[in-house]
Length: 409
Image 1 (cartoon, rainbow, N blue to C red):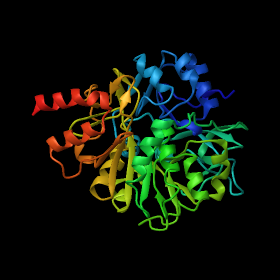
Image 2: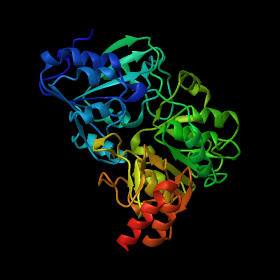
Image 3: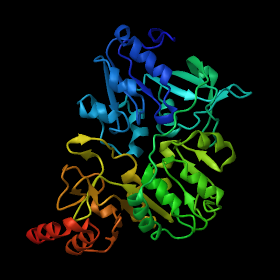
Image 4: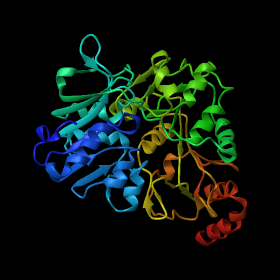
């Protein structure tokens, strides 16, 4: 095991890559050696590492942009420091030192003939953080694919390396159910041939992608990609032929999917770019065909979106939702928020946001979609917005929502 005491000066802050690109051996070394290293502040994004929730030492203070994956357990326990920031703000936060950046842990591809490594499927914020991190430690994983779109890192840049040959972590995902598919059908009707799509990962985005097989010349520009793009590429749907920039190219920052996705990346027209490009307002403003599809926990009767807190626990993030929703609404084609009409026996369309936290403002939402239909909000006043949103709420909750809307009027 690598001895981190040689590379982490007293008080040095640490960051590491996220999701399938998380350098697990290095993170576990940090957990194992924290008693000798002393108190540390560390940043990571989405994590699927169960050890962080089972064994997080008191000496390690964990910071993230959201309560994502296993981090929601830490959030529930009050052991996660969440920064409520746009994803597009992360590069600046690293540059200005608001995030720990003394030491960075990265998982990279094996070096090429020139002795350089790729960040592979985890470029996103890591590529931006690297520029401001004096000490880099790498896990060189024989199974990490080399990807294109971002400059490679020379071996001499790493203070130390550990070599592994382990499968990349596959994204945990349940198959879309009938509700997901109903929502996806409603979303698909809002997408036109030639649009450039942005969406996240999970059962609902997967169902939406599957629902677009009859479209033509769709583009893709998003923070993450999943297996759903494989099916659209194979069917000749995702060509990017009409994109205003990066024509013919799928642009993303990270891949979260199956082993098949990771193994096929070399044969796909995919470029991995840093967050300073994928989420930048200057980039997104050029995509006039942009249609953003984002999810929510709740939406109020004016169109305000809550996507971070459920029943008092921070389980989501601001993330890139506002970056893409605002661009799609202002300079793109359409900003869509898609969600189930129910959470248990409760309505997700509510008179006011139960959590009291607004992730995306009503001015950045064009359409809200549930399994019961689509509420078009662009150009509507508050009373008409409420009427349209109630119409797509779960039927058993509509009467109560109508009463609440009357009381507010």
